[in-house]
Amino acid sequence: MAKTKTAETTKDVFEFIQEFTESEQKRQDSYELVKLMEKISGHKAKMWGPSIIGFGSYHYKYASGHEGDAPLLGFSPRKAAISLYVYTGLPEHEYLLKDLGKYKIGKVCIYIKKLSDIDRDRLINLAEKSMEYVKEIYG
Image (cartoon, rainbow, N blue to C red; front, top):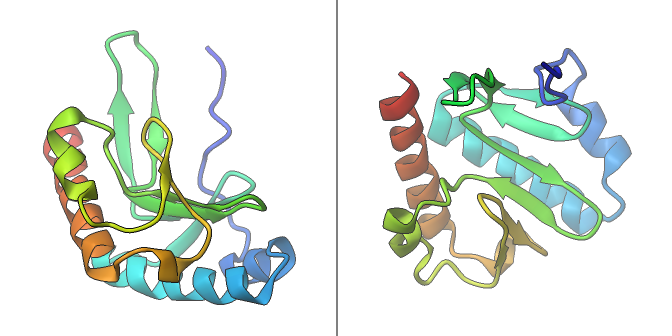
């Protein structure tokens, strides 16, 4: 079975932000997201793989037999948009996206151009509920 690329690393989070972000806006949003997600999760920021900043962790195992570790919450300040890993993608959690603000969504990833495009209180609620769900399912 293939090894997942998204494993916790020892790379410094703030060095990564400084090197990886191309605009001052994205850099400042990243610093703010670190503070916010550390507060929500109760965990210090750590690098996961080459470009994800994660908070806390859990072990998952799917029916297919695939298993691994992933951050409880996370984000990546990618070039096109900031990717927020704070959503389960489940239909029963779609209500959490109501009035979040200006974003695009992938399967379980929320893409924003800048942090000011979304409602911070709604983001906190979304992250908290998603984290509760992950802990309930995976322990």
